[in-house]
Image: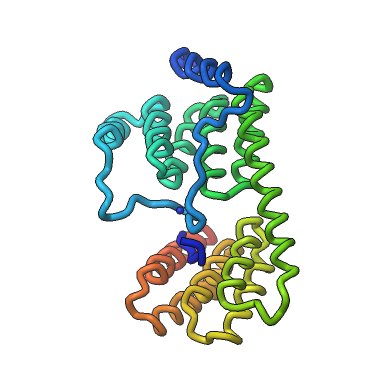
Length: 262
């Protein structure tokens, strides 16, 4: 899932003692410490390693460990390595798999919350941190991260409200891209589609708008609408890799949905 943005991404058998010691040290150092205090690039809905960026050796070894033995510890360690290397999007799947193995892991749920918040998917982050606190109500780190996610979501809501005060004569393509992105991050997909659709009045062949509207339709499971828009973006810009990736994603999701109905 890729999207354009104007701005220029204790369970049985498991030993948590080393992790808990680190967490305790962090909490003693500061009254408000996040597991990983870092913001994802504004454009990142799902972050990937750039093709020209070498993968750290520690990640390669952890990836091999997961392939050989996809245990809870190995999945958790790999996901944390991705987050530490500013690739939170790659950590999501591994954290979800870790939680499937150990649904009572407050640490895994907390880390999932951190990854989502880094990706500016605030509600998902809030939900994950809330789950961590359901498991362990005394988990201060999860409390801190829950507040972090709620604060960031509130900031985004305020920013969107402020944008709505922009005079009509100053609402250009960049304005609509940013404004729609705000609604998208707030999971108000209908409003995001409405805002991005206005770009057509200014630039009928704006592939960023087409791609974004298609992505919002994907969030609503309206696969045919999304596919039509991704194809149109490719028609206007044949080398648009973002649209090509999203078209493949949309086709894949449509096929999955069709197979489930059968």
